[in-house]
Length: 316
Image (cartoon, rainbow, N blue to C red; front, side, top):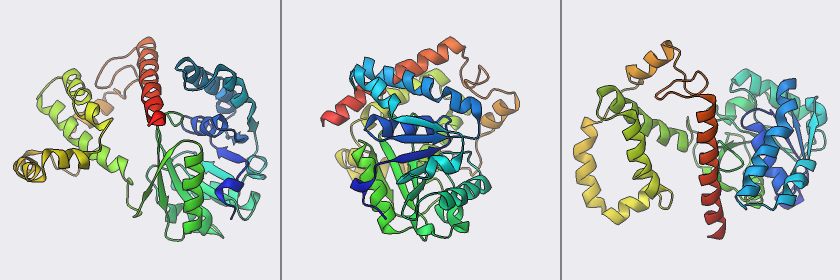
């Protein structure tokens, strides 16, 4: 396999919510990117979506205005998977979260690209061991799990399958570091990896608090943003525990844990909302009510704050 500094061209298979942002992240840092998708509407929207994202970065002075067109010029669209990956040194798959679809995609990518091309999956839940089960060379397949929006959130989780080589893992880590991401290697191939497990544990209690009426949805969100969110933007939870004192945490959390919702299914309120068609922003109602204008405003403010934090991260 090529070393990370020998990788010159990348490809992204899947142009949806995550795929176009991943392509942008590479293009911003100077890499020519080929992106493909089976959906013609998704491909048709790629350049406009990326242009809007880049404009947000330029307004936040994270990139220069001239970098907007330069990054866009590095992105090419292919309507055929084989053509997209043929000359790529590194490929990221970001297709539908379905094992059979991903297995088939990896088989097609493997047949069409160079034998030393690293093939990465953006899966958030499926083990690479399963995805690569039908590959001839599963040692070059690795998970690189990005977070939405991928062009702003720094973290990328690196997860190896049982047959993934350390070389493929090292190449992925080095390459992602080159494009200013923060790769974290997950030592065990566990469901949900790191962040989705942590997030699910917190959310399970959040849903329970809403269901029991402990506070309004608005106040629960506000409380988290003004405490956990405020602290976790600067310090990890384990450092916070060290600062508080482990003996204090042992007593407080030891008394509290028996009182926390610990079911293996989500609280009823979650399923009830889905049954009523309250799916979130896509239907105009979830835990809160939305209009297209309010959703756009939320995303705009989110991205503005993310840009500011990303600038702080780069400075540090």
